[in-house]
Length: 321
Image (cartoon, rainbow, N blue to C red):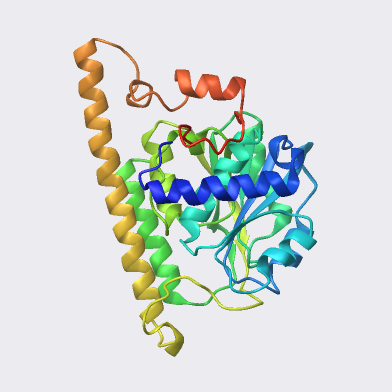
């Protein structure tokens, strides 16, 4: 994936270099499963989250990568003390940018699979096995948990309605039935994250999901649980009125921004698909849109990535993640 913003690449290159300097081969020779967490001011929550993550899933060793996204507290130190590999980024760019960096570290460090979870302890680490198993078995390229197939502790009816609305909307737009588009506990083949365009600094859940579907990857859902946050407060939907905690306002801002990213991504991918189809027809080449675009399952890029899942970590400006 090519960076659209040169400044993002400069920041990520510096973070990768600092990470290699700090951890050496622990970063450049990762185990098969990388558990990636984006964290912003999660002191008090991130330590227990990292400690409870499994050292082995589906018979494969794991490593935890925490991207501290411009934190102003002790998140980075707490995560490191708990045993995570910590990329401490000095600038707060958003969860999407933090996850994109985490994906890069995982891919280039040689991980075959990536699992994402949140820093706030809302997801059950015991369910990582359930989410990752279909990917390891080759039944899916990308698996997301679903609170609607599983369970949720929230009684916020506006949020519940939002989850249903966006699930229906994205299902309609992509042609694939999805029951939960924003669930943070996910698993995927590492090369998937390098094949789709990830440009959003925030609300990347929909961008990644829509990108994966439109590139022709096999997507599945499994039942999963989301608990109430027990430490700190949610960073979702932050806005000028955020700290007033006016009922419904934060959900409205979150929904509006999520919708903008979701519809924008769908339109971008639709245009890409049209362009790829036209190019394929002109060249007289058979194959799917994803393969014509040089990505997706069965493509040369995906095959090369499968042969060498992560590539190698680099901070060379001529390279791209």
